[in-house]
Length: 273
Image 1 (spheres, rainbow, N blue to C red):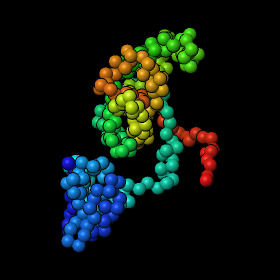
Image 2: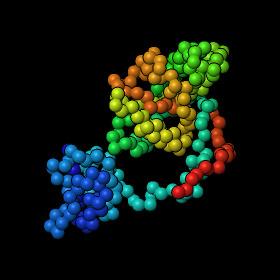
Image 3: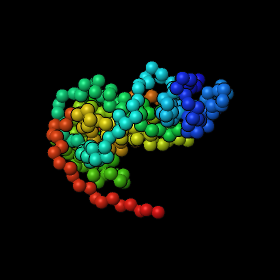
């Protein structure tokens, strides 16, 4: 079970680690002792890493994936607010893609960034499915159109909108994935008691925000998301682990066109209390 590794030469016994521990399981340092997690409480650790992250002396390491720990210099991760705002505002939904695939190492790096997304209780249960093969992407798009055919002329709230999409597909266009070379889905286990997919959507949002830094453009696959829970052939094609459900999906690739200006948005609507 996880514990904390304390560099006694660096530890100042400030006890910030004990104060900041979400579970309250780090025993504070005393005159003759250093902070520790007593063995009876080791199974209560959430692996959140707050104790390590907030140690001002960098004297503490959580005994979890220790080999991945990298030196952290305070300030190196800071981004000027103006640059961050410009980056976030320039993010666009991409619907025109170049045909060449994104190399798998680039996708892996984006996923490595996205896996640091927050999750409820630090559960880290989100898993990823990348549909890399372009023909498989077309198959998923086709199955989504098949679902749309089943809701035509029904009371389904989307029924009035599907005819144009189906017509475009039948004419050889792809209104589902916009001829993107790849799809990525974030999925997670659900049950009769817990069917909250928020963590998957948060993780995908991290993917979406990180992707442009790697030269990759994304768009949220809303049509697929509508279809996946109610059309078994589509869910079967995704072949998710048992009792897993899709949180959402993105189609992505290298953008055909580059952003050259910032679009406006409605003014913020905020209530201060």
